[in-house]
View 1 (cartoon, helix red, strand yellow):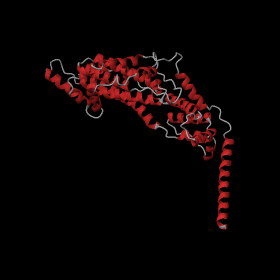
View 2 (tube, one colour; view 1 turned 60 degrees about the vertical axis):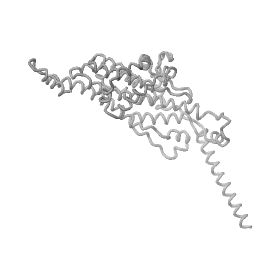
View 3 (cartoon, helix red, strand yellow; view 1 turned 90 degrees about the vertical axis):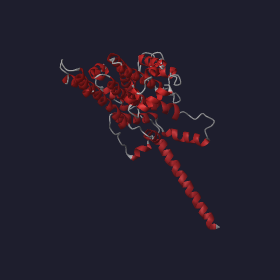
View 4 (cartoon, one colour; view 1 turned 120 degrees about the vertical axis):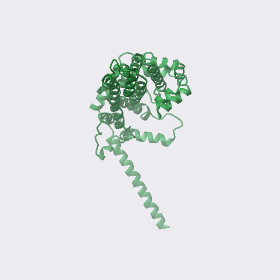
Length: 379
């Protein structure tokens, strides 16, 4: 019995010592985290990028693509009918050109979706492509599903025009499509929409190859839109503006979600206690500074600077937040770089066909059969 009492006293003293150590460590952390940082140069760069992208004109659903989508997009209204939707799904995994040729009712199917085409045209007509940073985390980001449906219809219309050998209409439609997505690519100030734009441009060039197959060889160069002839600029392919938006979005999350005191009655006492204990260890500006440096490094293809282990004593919660699951920026940079290769390939293929045709051009006394054979050889 005395031994048990003695062990109990030792255990109690050990527990008190551990608790005292934890409390002392927490107090030290509090003392180290009394002051936040001043805005860093990287944070200033991000702020300037955001300000340079923001239009001076008031942004509304009347003039802004994203606000228009948030207000007017109706996925149920702008869906593709199942026969056409199924065809487009198959086009992504099979020989699209052959499948389109096997659809004698394709023109009628496309004509039945005038509302979707009109919606896409309206979106393309809006002058401002800046995405206002949401005021709080509950605000949903606009979907581009209906816009993608509109692009699919436009590309199908171009394919049908090529089938009619109307290279002028093909050129006009491809010009309208790529002009919109290149403008959006340049102005994207959120990473999500930068990748959306890049995916749409890849779709454009992929489908253009099927369109070219419908044209006679001598018509191939006539379909070239001017947007194909201009190389993608450094600004179009840069991630800097997109990560500046991610930086601002992260600041909004910190201010409106993480630093906001729990209000719901459904939150348990332990969760509230956790918030009150951890919030003093989060320095908003230091977190913003670190995130700005990280994102700029990722955008430039560099690795963020590593800090010594003891740096985690300052702003530990912010450092944890900044270390959570970063997107694969290298993959995104590769996707953007690929766009210029796709443009060059599409332009080269179209102009090469025309050059080859001139090189193999038949003489005036060649037979019609000879001309047809030569045309087939370069198609």
